[in-house]
Amino acid sequence: MRAPLAAISRIVLAAAGLAVIGYGIHGLVTMARATHPPQAARWLIGGILVHDLVIVPVTAATGLLLIRFVRAPYRAVVQGALLVSAAVALASLPLWRGYGGSPDNPTVNPLPYGRNLAIVLGAVWAGAAALIAVRMMRARRARGAPPDPS
Image (tube, rainbow, N blue to C red; front, side, top):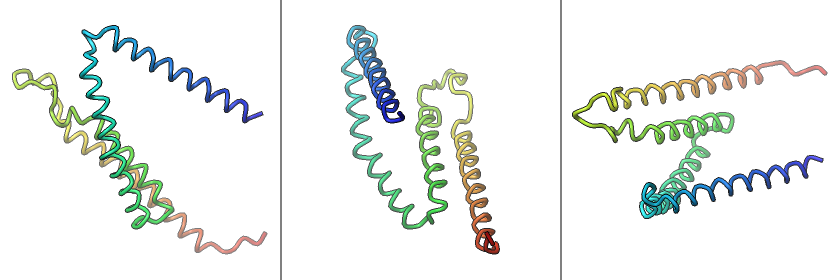
């Protein structure tokens, strides 16, 4: 019973995704004056190239380093913290790099975004360190516990 439901869900989600992509392409082409299709194509091609030539190799190398230097019980925590850190840093890149601001209007980007990013990343890694510490204590307790008589 589960397999047909999963297959139907996959088909429905794929159809919805294709419909959204079609709607986006339709808007891109029919509103060319507002959307600038050549510029959108450059961004699309650039994104694909950055993904394939930078992000994938860096992710693979990071995974190899984690396998080599981080023990298995803690590896998932470090991977999660790295993933969240990368996503937050990338999403806030225009802000902490100061893009879009104007020197004559300081209210456009009024906050110290670099500092705020450091605070968020510090919180992410503090949470990861706390989770690793909890896992370490549980592992020590499990090793020191007497065998279960049952």
